[in-house]
Amino acid sequence: MLDFTYPDITLIAGVDEVGRGPLCGDVVTAAVILDPNKPIKGLTDSKKLTEKKREQLFDIIKQDALAWNIARASVDEIDKLNILHATMLAMQRAVSGLSIKPNFVLVDGNRCPDFGIQTQAVIKGDLLVAEISAASILAKVTRDREMVELDKLYPQYGLAKHKGYPTKAHLAAIEQHGINHLYRKSFAPVKNLALF
Image (cartoon, rainbow, N blue to C red):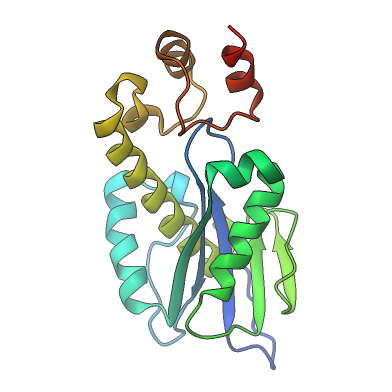
């Protein structure tokens, strides 16, 4: 883990997103400020954890963090703004919705939106920074749960299995059943299938 303990920095928010690549559903972001007096064991990149472990950590993070917030950008916003700008907007929403204002923000990846607070992008941050790992877990569990719920309403797309990502089976299902309001119409695979 990287050590970001600067003398003047006490409240570090980690920010991450889930759902930039899928063809449908919102992009979900989370911001987390961990409590230095309650370290959480087992935090790492959410993709490296089993579903069961993510679910357990999800509850622990919500219980033990100083502050956390989950935010999103909708399919309409993604289509209007493009996925990068929609993600940045969702990240800003996640940070501005925290119950405690951080004085430093660490963002997974190589780009940061303007939070009006000192910010740093951290490549592979979800592996290196506990706050970002925690945010990645909150965002992933939230989005995965939503996909499972949507799967009950639209079982023909198999969303519970692929979580909206462009798998072969998912593309075949779109071709067969068409596109509904869940889909990001600005994404090439969806746009191309919509032309048929």
